[in-house]
Length: 175
Image (cartoon, rainbow, N blue to C red):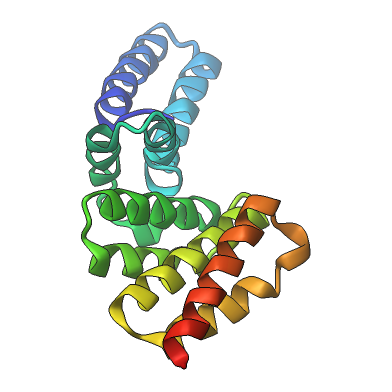
């Protein structure tokens, strides 16, 4: 839950503390400082800045969200839960920028990972279906709506309405 700059500063502080404790032969405290450094490095690779990006995404600050997500150098190293959320948020950022190719790609990836709730998972599927309908790829849209319908009992009523509207629109285009 730190930015990369905050991780670097904290790592420097804990390293200095570790050296200080080593100099004073307080090896238990030195080991604790080194453990904190290891945790910060582990968090960089497995957690990234996804939580901070999610907070700014919910505040609709898409520029800050994109900046925070760009700090993640290799998303494939994120834990499965964070990777799904990373892809979902990136899809939302690209959707706001109206870059539908990238948004579709990220939402497809998000649907392959576990998300917080079934509603989030269905939202990723519905976004891909919606983009596919807009592009005239009705077979793909139908497939993704079918996947979304498998979670029908687990989603909120608003999402059910969105699915119903997309299915209706898909039926009109297939005629």
